Structure formats: structure tokens, C-alpha cells
Amino acid sequence: MPDPSSPEEAHDILARAQGLGVDGLLTMLEQLDGVEEAAVVRGALTAGVPTTVVLEELRREVERRLVRTSAFYDQTQW
Image (cartoon, rainbow, N blue to C red; front, side, top):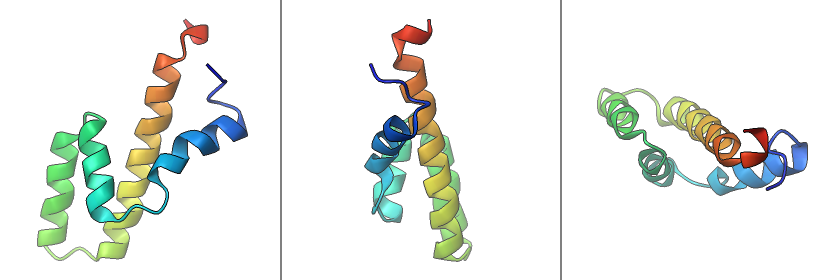
């Protein structure tokens, strides 16, 4: 498996989240073991937090989890 710390590999990992809207990112967050966090995001939207703010925070969280998951499954680091 390629090194997830390299810029090329990090870009490939993060590409999965690029271009997704709130719904797509919420689905991805749930798939990355973030069901509770997704519920908090939905609550923030319901409470009137601006979508642009929610989208940016959501994207950061999904990207963080993608990188973390990739590093976990990279057996060369075990």
C-alpha cells in the first residue's frame, strides 16, 4: 500500500470527499464510524447554523477520518 503521508497518496485518499455536498459527506461520515457526529451535524443544520460553515467543518472531519483510516490499514506501519 502506498505511503499515506506522501502528498500524492493523501490527495488520492481525500479525492473521495471532493465535490460532495452536505448529504454525500454525511453519508461518508456515517460509513467512517461517525453516526453520532452526523446526527450532531444534522442538528446544527436544523438549529440554523449556516450551511457553508457546516459544510466546511463536515469536509474537514471526513478528510481527517479518511486519512486516519488509510493510515490504520497501511500494514507497512505495523
